[in-house]
Length: 85
Image (cartoon, rainbow, N blue to C red; front, side, top):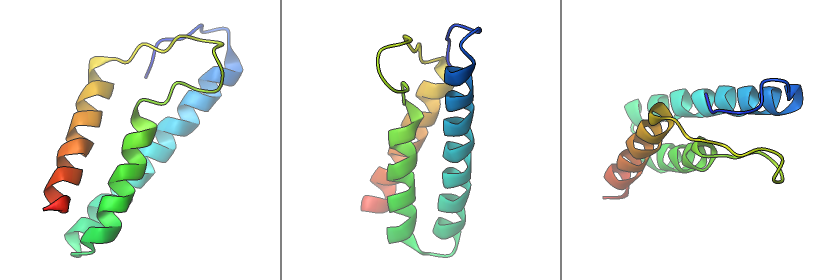
C-alpha cells in the first residue's frame, strides 16, 4: 500500500481498487504463462506494470512507493523481458 492522507476516503478506495486489479491481472498473467499463452501473458504483465506505480488522478496526493511496490514493478519487468525473448 502507498502512503496517503488517511482521511481521504476517495483516494484510499481508488488505491485499493488499483491494488485489487493489479493482483487479479498478475494472477491471470501467471496462468496464461503456465499454459504457454506467452503473448497474452506479456500483454497482461505490461498492463500490470502500468498499474504498479499508479499515483491516482490529479495532484491531490503525493504517492510514496514502498519497497514492496518497487519489488513488484521489477518482478513484472523481469517477466516481460523474459517473455520478450
